[in-house]
Amino acid sequence: MARSRTSKRLLLATLLLTLPPLWAAWSWKRDGPLQAQGTVLIRKGATVNQIADQLEREGVIRSASLFKLWARARHLQLIRGEYTFNSQASISDVANKLRRGEIHFTNIVIPPAAHAWMVQGRLKEFVPEDVFWKLWKSPNLAATAGFPDAPRLEGLVAPATYRVHHAMEPEEIFLAMVETFHRSVRPKLEGGELSPYETLILASLAEKETNLPNELPMIAGVYARRLKLGMRLQCDPTSLYARWLSGDLRFTAPLREDIARVHPFNTYTSGGLPPSPIGIPSAAAIEAAKHPEEGQDLYFVATGTGGHRFARTLSEHNQNVALYRVEVARQKKEKI
Image (cartoon, helix red, strand yellow):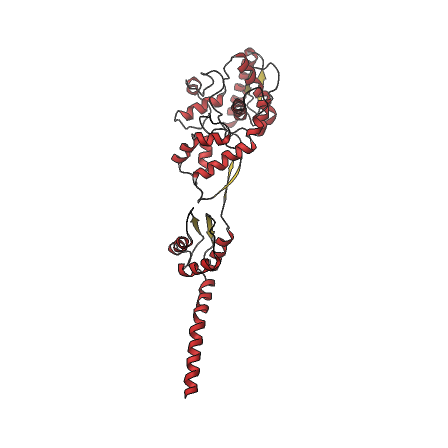
């Protein structure tokens, strides 16, 4: 009887010793409570305990206590970021993804010719609109880009693909854009007849006028000659930019009222270059602004079928405008 009682006690003791580890192992590997893919943001300064509680509170894991024990044993160093977990992810799956720092990034493409409102639209999920416009006028960010006197960041964002996540602060995203500009674009602005910032402005005008790379030096040449002669540039895209800055965000072709609007950015009513770029120029546009094509052309107008016709005199230009109108009328007639 004594031996039997001793055996039972040993068995009970063994069970008491082995059950907790078995339970922990089972809990560690069992399916988690997520019913669909879920996202968790690890914010700057968050502690392991705070994240464990957050994971449990948001229904990603069942036991914050078990996660904390594991994290302390592994001396887990959390990497701030956005993490996506599959449905029914186990605590093991969640822990390993955090340990490896498998951050979920979103690629934001900022292309050449993009203007402020397009950039804002592409970043709206990551930067609140009011914060965007405040940072867009930041002197510190302009200085980081290399132009401390620039009135806004228009043109000071490099055309590139940016990897962002929702745990990033808006300032970080902007800093990445202007640092990329300073590193990859700012050096290319040196060496032209104009100052680097004026080169950037001229490049943005050419970029917005045509999508044909071979025309960029020709258009830059027209504007460069007009600047030397003291002629107004009469660049249609600047009249649109003036419209948008005035609060009218219709993204249409210029209207008569746009051409007539008295505004520092409207080169129909103001002489010289506008105060800042009106968009993001491509590398080809910057090269064209540094080395405008030589010649005597002072005018150009769209053909209506792609590209532009260039002219030396106003008389020739008016003939080209008439040809453009005939082509537009023909196309309208075909659509009827």
